[in-house]
Length: 171
Image (cartoon, rainbow, N blue to C red):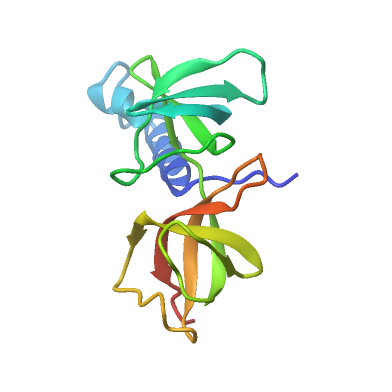
C-alpha cells in the first residue's frame, strides 16, 4: 500500500533532514537552540477519529480498541471531523495533537457544488463545505476549470471531505 504524506509532514521532514545535515557537517554545535528547533515535532501513526468534541477529538491508532483524547490543530475554522476521518497524530513539546492528513484529488467538479453536499470530482465523492478554504479565487461553478482538492479520507465509507480547493496550475 502506498504511504501518503500531508504537506505539513513533507515540509517538517525536509526541514528536519536539512537541519540534521547541517548539524552533521559541524556548523551547529551540540545543544544549540538551532539543533533543538530543527525537530520540534515528531510524527506518530495515523489515527481514526471516533468523536469530535469542540477543540478535542477522541481517536484510535490503527483501529486499536483503546482511544485517546487529543487537541485538534491545523484545520480551517469551524471544521468538524467525522467519525472515521483519518488524521495524523503529532507530538509537540511532549503533547499529542490531531492534525490534517490530506491527499490531493485533481479534476473537474461534476455538478453544482452546494455546501455540505457530496459531488463528483475525478470520479470520487467529495464534500465541499462552508469551512472549505477556497484558494486563488476559485469559481467552483466553472465546469471547464480543473481543481486540486486537499481531502480527508474516511474509513467508514463516507465521501472525502475537502479541506482546501484551488485551481490546478496549467503546465
